Length: 99
Image 1 (tube, rainbow, N blue to C red):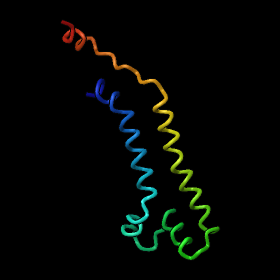
Image 2: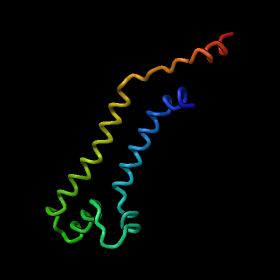
Image 3: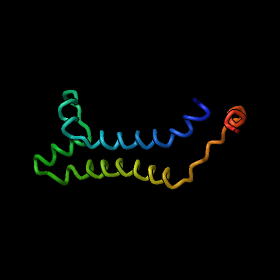
Image 4: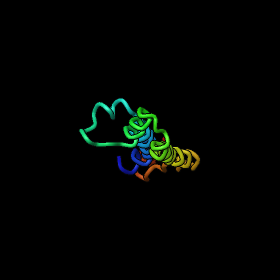
């Protein structure tokens, strides 16, 4: 399992984790409903500033959301651009798989 399956699944797990991170970071309705009282996230701070009409005060939070969302995109681009290693069969499995 550790020598064969995990190296094959690792890029997909990394990509899935990054996509979930980006989705959760920008999910405002869930954040508004599930956050503890007196706890501000970037999305809730930006929402509060936009509600008040003070967009310039929320600009820093908006830029941080964009930057934090851009990091996983860059990482995904690097992962998809690197050639995948072909997992060589261990000697024991190669002997069994040979006809």
